[in-house]
Length: 116
Length: 114
Image (cartoon, rainbow over all chains, first blue to last red; front, top):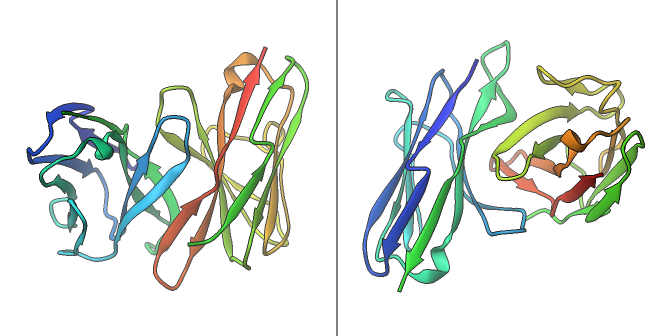
């Protein structure tokens, strides 16, 4: 059974600082997603990482994937208040043939608060 | 991104009743999924909605409780049957866009069972 663990679960940081959210998963997968959720809202897609070594950047957020270590990171650079939200990583559950099924197992989420 | 519309956006229901949630996508998609997000929790996959065949349910979810229809490539419904307060959650429809691996979510349907 695929397990996905995020840490930290709660993160309070000051504007202008850098920090990294970690996402570990327990079984083989080659596809990982990062989503943002604002209170009372649905999920906004941030990144999809499709291969080992993939790195994507959008604004102050950068995500990477190491499939050998079963680890993804979401790095926040020079945080601003608008980044306050809950961030989820989600891992593709491979099907019985070992291929992508597009069925996701989610981490617990990291609740990020950026303080002025 | 895909435009995914869900109805209702929220509802308050009585114990023992059933509610059907609709998911409409603005383009044809092969794969559609239903997730549940319990209050303050992460998301859990309920089932894959297969067009033209029965849905495929994840461990812990059964067809009698969560019947799903997928009559065509742009539409699906999820019914929450014989509801109890434990069913109070946000139910989200998701679609897979194959060419770039993206998975998008609808706005969610927030269900409160009294």
